[in-house]
Image (spheres, one colour):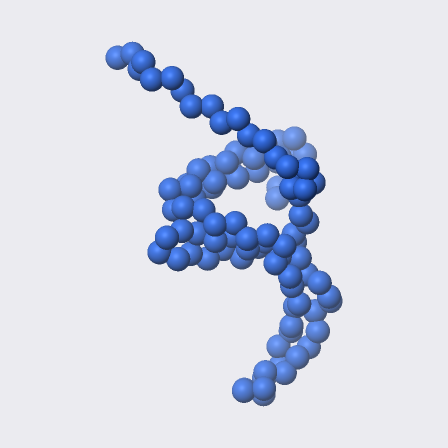
Amino acid sequence: MVNDEPENRLEVSISAEVESGQYANFASVWHTQDGFVLDFAVITRPPQLANDPSSGQHFVSVPTRIVSRIRIPPSQVFELMKALEQQLTAYEHETGHKA
């Protein structure tokens, strides 16, 4: 069976402000009924010991700042996971390092 439909090819462009990217050393992934949210953050100060006023327990506070929040529909999560796996495998082959 021959498919007469032309293939889709994304023509991706990026603005100069976005092109350099944002450094993040922490990521948080969560979801709502409508989609998935990826928060990328950077640790802003060294961790420090703190006290929980309600319980009195000590904990280590790690101050972070969200540098980017990406919202994606559930259908794109699998595509993102496949792309990350492909890139991770390529990285490991190129560098010899397991991430």
